[in-house]
Amino acid sequence: MLKSVLRYFSAFILCLNLSPLQANPDIEITSERIDPYLQQQLERRVAELGLTQAVKHKQLNIALIDITDIKHPRIAALNGDHMVYAASLPKIAILFGAFERIQNGEMALNEENRRLLTQMIRYSSNSAATEMLHRVGKEYLAELLQSSKYQLYCKAMNGGLWVGKEYGRGVAWKRDPLHHLSHGATAIQAARLYYLMENGQLLKPELAKEMKAILGQPGIAHKFVKGLKKAAPEAVIYRKSGTWKQFHADSAIVEHEGHRYIAVALAESPQGSHWLSELIVAMDEIVLQPQPVAYLRQ
Image 1 (tube, rainbow, N blue to C red):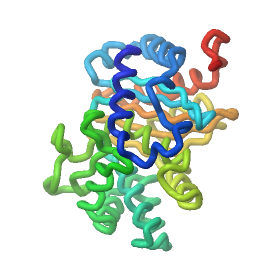
Image 2 (cartoon, rainbow, N blue to C red):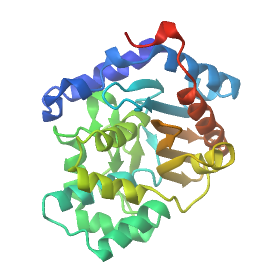
Image 3 (cartoon, rainbow, N blue to C red):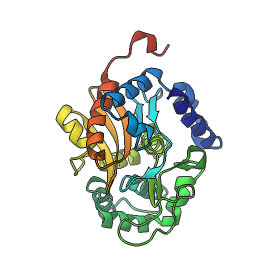
Image 4 (cartoon, rainbow, N blue to C red):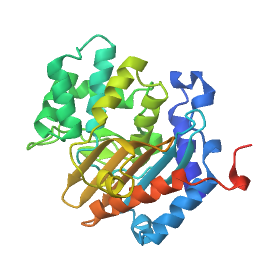
């Protein structure tokens, strides 16, 4: 498994070869920063939950990044670059597109736009998502996600975040180039968006704070929220989920007992929602447990 994870992040470096985001090498996610212990623990807990076969058949895709020390992220992944239909989870890309417009002075963070963005993220409103997609611009968003500056959809990483269709009835206007999905994601690329936001590589600090606030106070209590509410109600979660038929997705930044981590899980199974509720508890416990001395960073 570790070899496959190293492959994901070698591809990550390839994606960012020409990116200005490399200006500060101390905050890059690189293959050297993959954490063997975190990977080992993730694989162990997945096996204990009886989900090894789901991972093997790519019905379950996971990324976990411990960002308690934001400049030294600890990374683990299973099928991290496997792109799947992610339902409403890619609405985080529309959220980012809106804030990029706002940062560039091309859109106002007024009461109406804030209301639409909040409805789109916290309550997963399809009508709000479609309206915001129109305001951001479909072509603009597609170009932004593929841009050399952000590379949130990158062919070298087998794709990533993609919004090629309005949220509602109708046909896709542009499916993703590699997999022809209308609303797609990989676990790694969804996690990257959160990582870039948290370490200041996505937006100015005041706008990153506003974007994160919209991701807070989830209005739908299922999947990650359900699991943490039961096992660790004191944890603070900023998230966006997605559900359509057998496709279940969740993504979050979690702050708990002085720790902070990014968790993403994408499942294709009627049991996917239950899987994700159990997985987030396991991932939370992994991050909070002390590392053995042999694995501590020198």
